[in-house]
Length: 104
Image 1 (tube, rainbow, N blue to C red):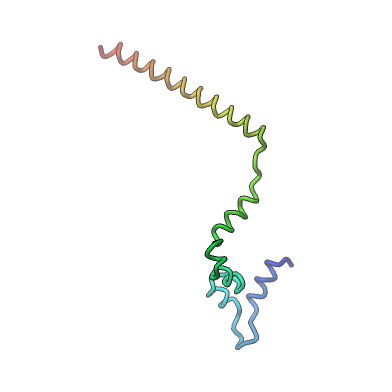
Image 2: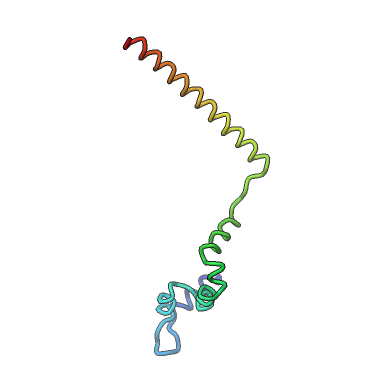
């Protein structure tokens, strides 16, 4: 059993005080441990909020492209943008010519 499963199992079992489960206490705290609540409420919680910790942890999971991949993909984007611009320009020129020939 991993740590997360152990914590879930511990929260679901009744505590020694009056048969209440820890799940209610955890639910009342928004699913956070008492240690996490202390960090969130303290000075560190104000200077380093949970959303910032979540962003940093997600950015650590990202597989960043290499310099060579970035260069190649940049060239592809530039070529595609120029190609689409030329095609749209030619279509605009053709329809403008067609409208001039049919209306005037």
